[in-house]
Image (tube, rainbow, N blue to C red; front, side):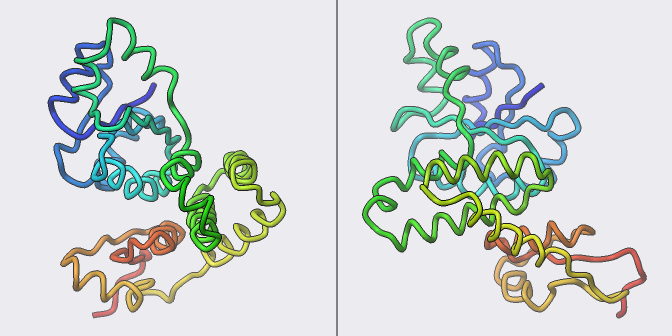
Length: 231
């Protein structure tokens, strides 16, 4: 009842040979909402297992918001530096790769804290920005019990009082209660520059999800209700 997401086809093959047939790859392209929704038909438990280089880490960070917006149970495995699933499995002694994959899952909060550990420890501004980014991520989650677990994790890792985080996340979620007039796109003006730049628009029926994407700098998303649209 889980799916591993890796970066390339050779990674999928190595994972399959190791016994993880529940592995997929976007084949070098960015993970899309449609792909996430396809996986969700089978499981909501998703594990990112991407390359341990700068592009791989960047891809993992970029994929966090879309995955959380789709309300999946997200876990991440960070491989040793310079490795990808293919090379790591091939180089590992028998049983070691399986042991690593089974025991090294972390949540997205710990993952972000690890990747920016030096900056967070030496730069208060960077720490504040990271906390803001993570509270934005947490605010996307619909289940209040899951949100509370993430709040506790964030509080423990960054030394911030839970009540402060709860207050900030409550304010963010209040913004998600906005509605729109019949026949009018929601957040179109805010999305227009990104739509023009990326030459792509994503239209969602859930306005909460639109705001969640915008909070995480994915702004080529707009909302549409079920009423007939104005020309």
